[in-house]
Structure formats: structure tokens, C-alpha cells
Length: 78
Image: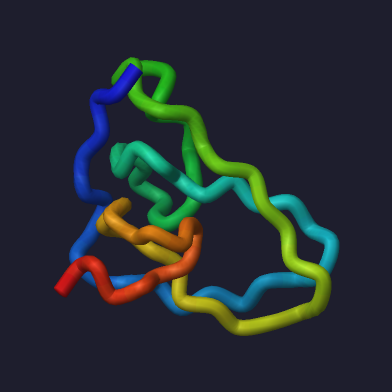
């Protein structure tokens, strides 16, 4: 199950809320980058990564799917 594509070329700045679950798109097919919209099922690609944060924060989430620190951008898109 590895039919992944780049979801974008730059990270997306997101306001994350404490103790809320997020589904980060790992496959790149979502039209709601950087979050999952379920297209991985249709594309037979990787499922989302579910994550949460301990406190409210601003984060830059990866869309290129090359990060070594998912779901956060580490500059791999450059």
C-alpha cells in the first residue's frame, strides 16, 4: 500500500488545539492538505497519521511527505 504523491511543495501553517486529534495526510492525495480527506482509500495509498498536541500551538505541517519528522516540516521540500 504505497501509492503516494507529493501533496504540495511548501508547508502549511496551522493553528493546532491542545488534546484534539488530527489526521495528517501521509499519501499526498488529499485535496485538504495537510489533512486527510479519505482519498487514500480510493487511491489505495497509505492511511493518515493521527496525532495531537499537548498545548495550543502554531505549526508548519509538511505537504511534500518527505519530512523525517512527520507531520512537521523539516525543510526536505527544498
